[in-house]
Length: 330
Image (cartoon, rainbow, N blue to C red; front, side):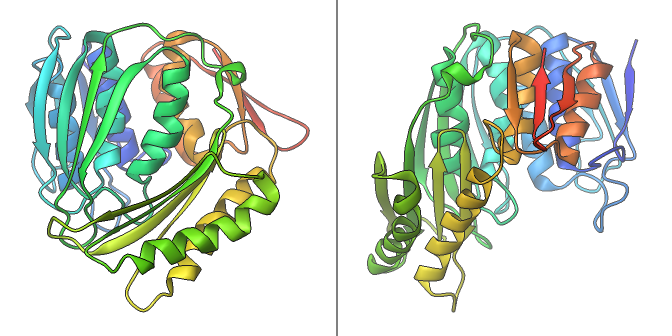
């Protein structure tokens, strides 16, 4: 029996689509999403959503209907999970990390690899460095065998970034704080800009962070001189919390570095083991492998994933804590 989901519920955006498709593939269950992104300024599916669905479909030979830009209904009928090696092009500067977030929990079941082309760092989305240094670092600490390589950086408006991820199948340990790696660092990235730009970004972020975190484990300048894009970003992290900022024309490099560092410090000042961006990304793994963690907040994105997990009979418990943080367990 097909599970029908209202795509305008809760967060009502792309995360609902990506998570629902991943859960459908894992459960081997047909799903139909109606009223896709109905409340958004540009409703319906966008190119980055199509790329995520194609990535997941490649892991299970799914039959898909409604896979077109602007479509307000999507039907996804998965087959058995299988190892696959894929290439997916978003076709725009849409976020590569978001495509990988949909693909990864499915690929962990059967293994495989994927190369995704698009934007590696996009405003209002996770950077590829957040994916690698925070989410994947935590999953590796729980037993995930996954590697990520950034072949090119891609920025708005031209995109063209390229990231390759390879996964070996395996079951993770229960998600929990004892596995959180104790690391802190900064990646200051740029493409087709003078080297002093990412160096100044790094120096500014470091000056803000190190008085709080102590000496950093990593302080990386990643300057690329290939690909069609020009841009920069900074990603900072400490344990399972992070902050990031995007450069733009006319914005001094120092302000980009400080903005990323300030975003991380704001998370570190709040109770909870993981930041509010990471929390909703961990819930699928929590539901599948068990465990518990605390987060700085229960966001609408987390509420959306909780709702979807319940629809697939994978309930996750949420409990607010007296200090304002949120505890999730399964």
